[in-house]
Each structure stands twice: as structure tokens, then as C-alpha cells.
Length: 529
Image 1 (tube, rainbow, N blue to C red):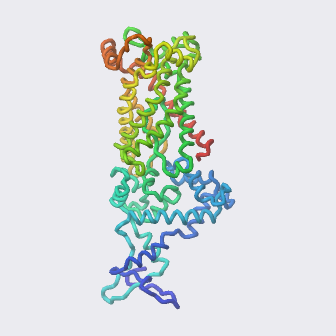
Image 2 (image 1 turned 90 degrees about the vertical axis):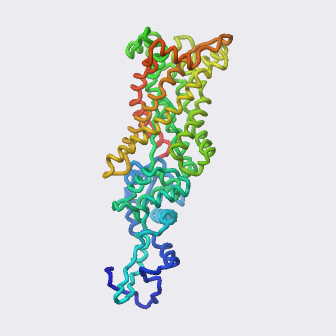
Image 3 (image 1 turned 60 degrees about the horizontal axis):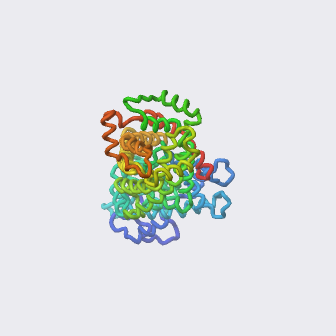
């Protein structure tokens, strides 16, 4: 309605103050009355969305159609398992599909929760639409009830400061950069504010959108990458993923991907161990000569020595790290909130220490088996028995200190580089999209993990050298971390601290590629779509 134009009043009805929107004096009760109804989508809008998701037009949406639609709508923000979460909420008769009535029920219920969150964030009620009053003739202008309801909800908007305050109020740690990018990803009309329609569109098919804690997690993205060195900070799961069991399915899929990836790149991993322990300025071993030496001594099959221990430790290491990470968050007082970078790094380091200490004997066995001669050990259990009998329990923890020491630079640099690369990409493409694609994030994760390995590699090399030392029970304690560092500097100089780095980098690209492809197939096989 144009200023100065009176709306046509409905006949045969009393027109009270609820029909009038004046510049001065719309009371709280008046707004509350409209807020209770104004946020809902029109039934035609819900029907259009249903038809978009119902690909085969059979009047029902199954989990595969829902997953396909979510991937198209959310892009890189789609996280495996979201389709199942929505289906579990909407499929009331548990037949594996959502009919239109069930879909309407899900949308209606979810909108109520989204509207509560939106109103909570929009504390000042900014942007409430109104019709101006003509001061000249003092005419009171009225709008129809339907238009008024739409205006009151759609006129409300949230800016970055309100969003940041809401996160801070709920102890959710986010940076200004993340708030800006999150706002931008929702801001379709480029006004630097998010109105109710934009907020609803962004979160309507996000099963966690009614939780302020999970809103930032929905925007953040993490990808499973296994490059053989499991010192990364664990992924965080939403409460819905924990309740529905999606978390353990994703862990199992990640573990299976790690098994395939590590097995495929095991020859390069064994070559790395060989170069770390045996190569020096006097004993020059290259990549080709190293492979030739291994094949000549034990045949092609010997290239996979030590892989059994490397694969066996995946399951306990992942499980211990996950539960230790959850415990560390509670110790930091962050069990009910998203962690900031500092808290996440601290919790991740604590989880890494717990998992590394628990499975470290398998690390020692992996190194010993990788370096063994043909016929020296019959297998993993025989190697453990022989080492225990001849060297004692202490040998299973040789090199533990440099291993734990390496967690901090690895995790810290990995996290810092990942965030830097991701934010650099977003800044460069700031006029295009606030959501990087999955392959961009995969590349960022690969580069950050590689940088983390580079920083902690000298400690990894010293750890491997200490693990390889065989000492009888009655022998002296042998070399320690400092003496090994001095020996390397004396014989090879600083370059000696990076022996075996080439095959370690050579396995990064195939390891990441294989683990990602296998993970995608495994999670779908486990029902995480």
C-alpha cells in the first residue's frame, strides 16, 4: 500500500487496533499476537518445496530423494546423515517415506523452533514494517490482516552484531570472520542483514537449525582425511548425530577408509621408515634403491611389512581419541558449546596424548615389523612376544616422549593453516559464494596436514629411531631423544632430520584421494546418505 492510501476494510467485522499499524505505539501484545502466526510458510510454498524433493512424483519422499535434494540446496554445507535425521523427525508412521501431510507437519514444527531462535537473536525487533501516518490530515491507515502478518515477520532482520551477541550469550566461540561469512551465506539480497525468509530458507532443511550451538557447526565443514599420521583434531558431532547413531557410522566409515588408504600406500610408508632408520650420509639410500633393496630381501610381499599393525591400531586409536576429546571438552567446561580455536586445540592435544599413549605399543610393533628381516618374526603377536621376552615392557614405550611432543606442532599448524587457506579462498571469492566446495576444503585439509607433518617431522624421525633400537633387559637404557638429535646433527647436519620425507610426501595425494572415495562409499553402505 502506498503512503496516504487507506486499505479496504473487511465488511461486517469490527476493526480493532490489531488491524492498525501506526508509527507510534504498536504495543508488545499486538506484535506478539502476529508473531504467533506470521512466520509460517504458505501451503503453496510448502507444496512447491515438496514437489522439488519428490523426484519421481509418487507423492512421497524417500531418504535418497531427500539426500539428493539437500545436496542440491545446501551444496558443500550438506553433511552426511542429515537426510536420515530429517526423515526420522518427519516420518511419523516409520514406513521409510514422508508423505505430503508428514512433510507439512515437519515443516510447521521446525519453523516454530527456527522462529524462536530468530526472535531471540533479533532482540531489538529491527526492521518491523509499518505504514506511515499522514501528519497533515491525521488519517489512520490500515493494512489487511494477511499483509500485516507477512510484513511483521519478513520485516524483522538480524545483522552481524546481533548474531555475534547471540553466540556469545550461549558461550559459542566464533570469530568475527566466521560470523560475517555465515551472515553472507544467508544474505540473498545483499543487504548485510538477514530477514526471516532468508533465515528460514537457510535452516528449514537443516535438522539442527533450532539449536544456536549447531548453527555455526552447520556452516563449518570437516572432511575425513587419512594420510597415515593420525594426530589431527577429531571432528565434532551435533547432538542429533550422537542421538541417532550417525556419529559411530561416520567413525566406522572413516576407519574403513583408513584401512584401505594405508594398505594402498604401505610400500611408501615402509620405505619412509627404512630411510629414517638406515639412511645416512655414509649409507645413501634413495627411493628406487630402497624399493630394490626391500624386494631383493623379501620379495614384493615384503613391501607391506608392518601394515598389519598400522591397520589394527586404527579402530582403538579413533575410538579412544573420540571419547577422550569429548571428555576433554567437558573438562574445559565446553561440553555444551562449540569450541573456540584455542579450546579446540587444547582438547585435541589432550585427546591425542590419550590415544597415542594407549596404542603406542602398536606403533613400536609397526616399526619393528617394517624393519624386520625375513623369518625374524612370524607375525604381530609373535613379534610382541619376542620383544617382551628379550627386552621387557619398557621397549614398547621407547620414543613415546617425542611422539607426544610432536602432537602440539602438528595439530596447531594443521588447524592454523587450514583456517588460513579456507579464509583466503573465501576472501578471494567473496563476491561469489560464502560456501567453499568440498574439493576446496579437501585441498585445504591436505595442505594443512602436510604442513603439520613438515613441522613435526624431526620429532617423528627421532621417535622412529628410538623405536627401532633393540635393547636386552639387562642392558643400559640406551639413547634418549636429546642424544639421538645430537647424533643426527653430528653425522648428517640439519638435513638428516628430514630423511624419508620424500616418500612421506609422495603418499599424501593417493592417500587422501583413496580415503575420500572409500569413505563416501562406506558411509552410504552404512546408511549415512
